Length: 353
Image (cartoon, rainbow, N blue to C red; front, top):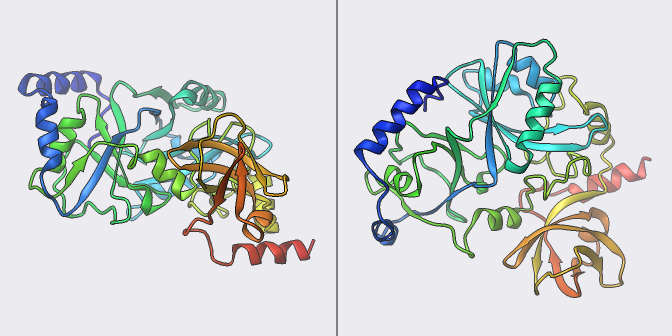
């Protein structure tokens, strides 16, 4: 996909697309979904996410000093097409989470962020721009992020003939979180489905209460956005950024780096985000307690029978994983993508303090 800055070209492209076709009616879309296929995927727009364009000759050193990951990796010919990273405050606590996408222009990068935090993040970027010739603006009216995933059955689109105007990249955090799709704003759900159905490779359906992106994330224990990662509250390693390939411990200095490095090398991380399986509805209290009544953490989101919580590792994983939320029993789960020897490493670190 050519992430072009030329607005005249973009308007012309939109006019042409609208002139030569319209979105298929709902009946047509449903017929497309119901066709049999070996690979059934869920395609969902990320309505709570927004894209920010950062452009300039000094864009790499500019971003390098602000985020936890190594942005220079995106410049390598064999480097990834996207990386996960966090913006921290001076105290080393998380402000905003982001996925950074490279484009065809080596001086232009797209930053995906929480829509509610977009204006604050742009203000944050402009504060540290100083005299660098860096342009920062929202491209919400140009591109929209989507996610396509196939829970439990793999998330590869290698055999699909995808429309060239789409930017496709695996989620840089976990393969199980699916594939990010950056699409022009004029491409609605129907057009995107057609682009994945060119040779009948994929069966694509809309999100449902039983299959949607938030539920997928909660099952994996991955937080996203300012409601789940409240600005200035948690540490990047509490948000599992080290396990999600979101922190580089070799790239050098960046805002909040000192505390992050110290916590990493000490090995003492008392809390982490984990998935929780609920047995009843959560109405009021978001406090997670043990059966004995001790506070063990806080719930930051829930949907269906799953929730996301920041919990004390030692008490939960090495103790009773049956917990209480809002008077109902629930069960903490260790994500399958965590290191197997996580708790033993923590005990070793504590013994050396």
